[in-house]
Length: 313
Image: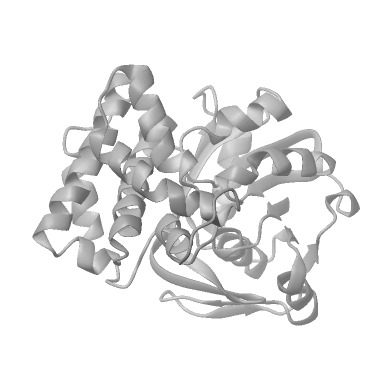
């Protein structure tokens, strides 16, 4: 199976690395020093599940040099969707499908608007990982997991084939019957952990332990669960309790990418995460005061990172 991994960071690098290690035909779309190292020295992954290295990696910054793939795994930031949708066009043959591994609940619709209906799956991943330097991926924690399915919710042979390829590579992968539940479940967790982590500048071990921030974390999750149900997403009654229990199992130093980006002064996915909660809540008639507070508190830092606002550190 010819698999193009567009975005070889913590997510794309890990899952693409597992597929390449298993002998699948993988090409990474990367850039800069990361690309140079991938070409010259391959990909190194450190993981609680076992470190591994793929010595010979196909990588390029030019999708037109690759040709059509069977699957494109899209692992970029949500604010790069427009640029990515245009850039992956050379990778798309008549039967190619795209599996977005982005955070948020709006990516499939945004991509389909550019690439066409039937081309883009709904998809998500669970993993805490990052780039630790050119050619180096660090899987910090959480069992890596992928879920995806056709946008119309119907089972498909191509989805089943790709799921089986991932499982053969040692990746836990599913094609759930209701991807909206899976997407909103993950959205509820990561947006809440990311937002609370960003405003407190504290890792998950602190957030879940301090009584005040645990209350804040629960409140943020409950707001998102209410928005989801107002939008006819059938989240289970115990979804918040299970999310908090999962948070209790994570490495204490763990954090969401939103918090790391905000703290380190980089552009973040604030608009597609917390901003989307506020927007979709308003659209659905659901108050979201916790997320409105988080969003407005972080907005000056986001605008400074994007160069539209200047003030001292």
